[in-house]
Image (tube, rainbow, N blue to C red; front, side, top):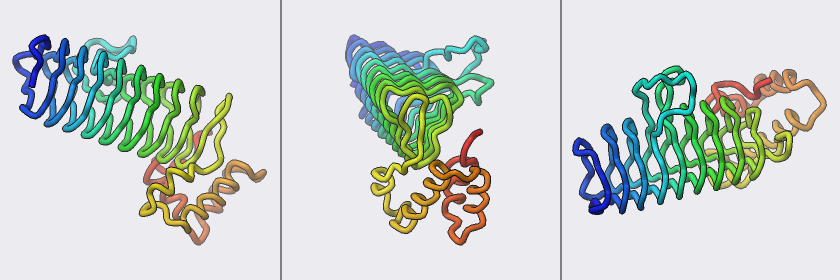
Length: 255
């Protein structure tokens, strides 16, 4: 259903199951999936794909050109997965040619009101981004991570899978997977046990106990971090390094 006050470019195919609410504007080159719902005053620029069953609330602007001085009008994309929720007045920019050409939002992501996702960001499945967060360009957020409200993440930093970042903080360095990050400057060390216990198939109790010891040694111990990492790699339990290989390209920390 398309509300009479909405404008949809004639080339855009809107499935019968989708709802386009009052005063929405959909430009040429947009792809809309089944059961998508646009509430009202949503503007979707060209080069955007919205996955099935995603709901976008009032005033959000998707796929505007990247806020990057190097951008020269190249055709780039914003791709939003299935079952996502984007609340009121969020802004999600397209990618840049230098950054791979795509800003990518995976399935089952919740982005709360007034948040901004900059060009070339990659947000993995199950991520929750609370109200008023600001993500610079090229930010990476791993699966099932949670970002607290009014938090700013500096460009090119990454937040690992299953991590939790508290609200109102500045993230100017990488946050390791499974950790909790707080403070100014940002600090981390304790495991995000709440997230791990919500995924028992990935984190049985034995694995959680091993991760707890590893994090204590890495972030609260006095030994050099490089020495601890080598010990973890050679130990009888390879899960720690294997997890970082899978979720962070093998990098445990960035110096």
